[in-house]
Image 1 (tube, helix red, strand yellow):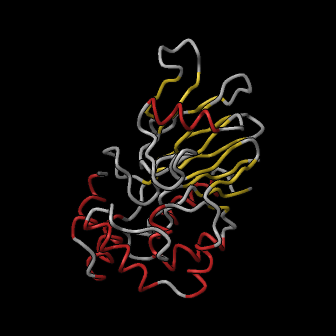
Image 2 (spheres, rainbow, N blue to C red):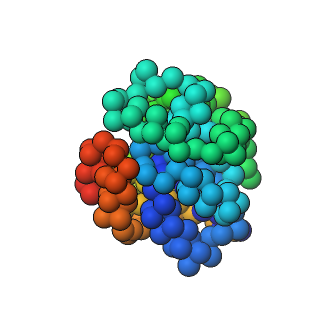
Length: 247
């Protein structure tokens, strides 16, 4: 079984379609797991939600998803993010709102725990630090965890031999992580629709149950097409500009 793992699509349909085409070519359409923030920032929220549902995605809720339906406040969002959330809220159809409102914040699949942020604060906390990683791991009851939110591909390895009990590693395109039952891991596939690691290519991962691996993939997509739609929608210019630099 080969399953595609996506996160932080952020209403970027061109990036999502490129990832799904790549996943199909890799034979990774036995399942599709989504780690939240399907909408927000980008110009095609309804189209992205339709495409993910069509592909049979099994998602968890992200902070932008919940903000778009009024379930969390935008008080802590930066101005561009808040403006995009309010714009997104005006685009969503009733069925989209019901769909987002129904999403769990935590999901278990095949020995993995899926969450947008961390298990300590599921839709808000960024897993950037050892403190956040350890807090998450203390609540993780499965061998492997999947998180998004940071928009940066990352691996956390729990091991008592590390001075702080775990260590964090950035993942590059083509990285393959062995999933062993004798060590607990947390994995982040990066962002499909708005990468922030300096690489503007869409980022996603494939879980291969037979090989016991998690592999990271970067995919080219038509950035200019998404930028044009952002500008036509009247969304903040920075949301367009950042796509070209992966920040």
